[in-house]
Amino acid sequence: MADPTELTRPTRIAVTGAAPYDVVVGHGLLDQLPEVLGDRVERVALIFDSSLAERAQEALRVLNPHYGVLVLGVPKGEAAKTSAVADQCWEALGDEGFTRSDAVVTFGGGATTDLGGFVAATWLRGVRVVHVPTSVLAMVDAAVGGKTGIDTGAGKNLVGAFHEPAGVLCDLDLLDGLPAEELASGLGEVVKCGFIADPEILRLVEDASGDDLRPGARVLRELVERAVRVKVDVVVDDLKEVRGTTGAGHPGREALNYGHTLAHALERLTGYRVRHGEAVAVGAVFVAELARGEGLLGEDVVRRHRAAFARAGLPTSVPELAGADDVDLGFETVRSAMAVDKKARGSQLRFVVLDGLGSPRILAGPDDTALQAAYAAIGGSW
Image: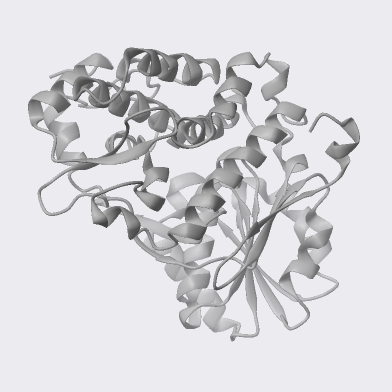
């Protein structure tokens, strides 16, 4: 990354396995859409965040000369990830007679990617999908790895399917104009990758100036690429998240859920007013405190959690969460919400924790005293 000319060249990160594809990171990548979709595709459903309608025209410009395009705008954010919105998409595909020779392109943030991937996974039991993520969060998280899903009243991402894309185009030009809060939210997932696998990410964030973490910056591009590689390395080895069920050693894909057990509870309890990356930051500090209390993690790494997430512009305690002032986030309420987590087994809570920097493991069934102490350490109420 030291050579400035490298910024003009796309980086291809190969995802190997039964259905290999590339994650491409760079600038001006939309013109590659037809190449990724392939010449056997006849029609494309463009599922896009309706708040990005003007930006989506750029994708339409590329697609229209090559395919018949069905344009499907969906609500912004988590409001898109419902069975009702998915049903509207299915009905539209049915009305247009979409077949297995057709494809889906998603254009938007993480929620749009999750929804569009789920629609593609379930239509005719799976049609081709290409993701064009428009936020840092979507680039490093939702668009990579083949997880798709929607939310229910019980919790986040409880309904879904594994469906790998044909390709992912992380066009960094699409980050121009991204609100600062959304950029910081994406960095929550990036910093998480630093703690579970790549400490160089932490160094880059800790040493960054304000300009280094803005769209177009070399450092931000390197952070995106490093976070994508962390996810790819884990996903290739454990696509369907089964390795962690052995109870020993590296938890496989579950490691990517570091901080997410509390994060998903906070998101749902606040009606998703708390952004995902904000919740992940607080959730990661919580499990760091939990691991410290269990004698697994040193105080220096716990302090580094607070410093790194704060450097990225993220909250590190419950009282810092914007949009949560009028919500009951007492321990009993939050514990009940965490019990619906996908990693839970029966009534037993399971957390991804660290026993050292870059060394994740599963902590199963910690007692409530330990959980309460960790929650109090991040400013949570009883």
